[in-house]
Structures are given as structure tokens and as C-alpha cells.
Amino acid sequence: MITIKTPEEIEIMAEGGKILAKIMKTLEKNVKPGITTKELDRLAESLILKSGGKCSFKGYEGFPACLCTSINEEIVHAVPSNRILKEGDIISLDLGIFYKGYHTDMAITLPVGKISFETPRLIRVTKKALKRGIKKVRPGNTIGDIGNTIQRYVESQGFNVVRDLCGHGIGKEIHEEPQILNFGKRKSGPEIKEGMVLCLEPMVTVGDWKLKKTKDNCGYETKDGSLSCHFEHTIAVTKDGAKILTQST
Image 1: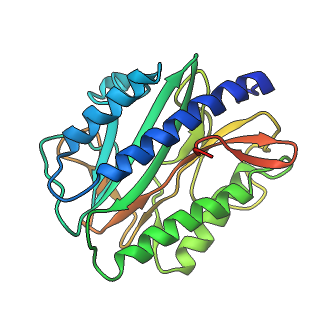
Image 2 (image 1 turned 45 degrees about the vertical axis):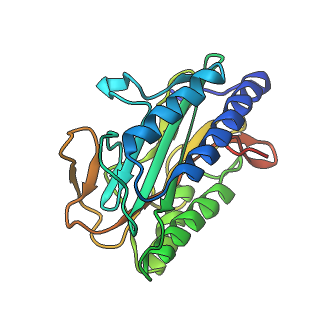
């Protein structure tokens, strides 16, 4: 069942989302060659606890960390470790906060130092795909309209969207209905209604979209070893359209 949030609930989620966005900005400043993903995780957890929140992911389905740190061909849910970031890597930071009874969730992909010529375009396209998807979040549209828009744009740019993972509803639980695919047909799936809160998260690959599990058995990576990219925002549906809850301003 898709839950409809009250304006008061959305206000609480916006408060948590703003805290999450500020934490992500701090993490972004610390992404550089020589840092380990475990150090980033420790920083994320300390900032969440200082804010009065809790880590949404730690302990969820056995996940052992607060922050997901997916590098290069890793798409999502890779576990932080002693792996050191190197010049030329790209890293996806995926983080959720549980604040005053509600979750918010966001992800960004960042370059580590100087990156190869084609990689900035992958990051730009994925970020733009998220923006285009968000524009479809308004009452009267469908969940399929979001996925169709993301897929058409990404494929027009010569990349692929991941088929086996998706966005989701969010609220008192980190993952709620509906599932939000990054592909699909217009006018398909549930109708978007005022009061829904949705996580849109395009996951884009340079090569094939097929996946396999990472060595840590928590995350996913591209089967062909091609680079991947991931962005995510938590979005509330208002009568006028989308309201991004996970931004600092």
C-alpha cells in the first residue's frame, strides 16, 4: 500500500532531509585521493548522531555500516572498508537518516581528483536524468512516466539504465511502496498523488546494465566491469508538483 503523508509529516521529513543534505555536503568536501571509505563512513555516522538522528541503513537487512560507498563499477550498497580512494576513481555516496520517526535518503556520485575525459559526462547525464524524472513528479502523472522519461534521456545519451534495482516510496520505513523503475512506459503504474513521498534514483552504466553481487555480498556492480553512476533525492508530491526534501537550501 502506498502511504499518503500529512503536511505535518512532510514538514518533519523536510527537516530531516535538510540535515541529510548538509551532512552530504561535508562528506563531499572530504572525498579526495588517500582517504578510505571507512573513514567517510565514520564521519557520516558521527554527523548523523550529532544531529539527533540515526543511520537508516546500519543494521537494515544486516548492512554493517551507515554509508554506502560504491566505487567505479560498483553501483549501490557497497560496504565501507579500508579501500583507499585513488585519483581518477568515482564514488557514489548513498546515505539515509532516521529523524523524528521518518527516513529520508539521498545519493551523489563524485569524482576523486582528476577523472578521465568521458566520465564527467556520465555524471552529468545521470544528474540530469534525476532532474528530468523529478519534473514528472506531479499529481495526475504515473510512476511509469518517471521511468520512461529517465530511460529515454539516458539512452539518448548512449548510456544504459539499471533494470534490476529501483527507487521507492519512503516514510516511517526506509523502503515503502511504490517501486520506481528507471525505465518503463508512459501512463503505466500507480497514479502520482499529493502527499506521496518518493525516492527517485537513476542508476546509469557506460556499458551493459546487467549486474552481479560485489565481493562483500551486500552491494551490486556491473557484470561487464563498466563504470556506473547514481544520484538520488527524496521528493514530496505537492498540489503544484515536486518538492525536493533532501537539499540544504
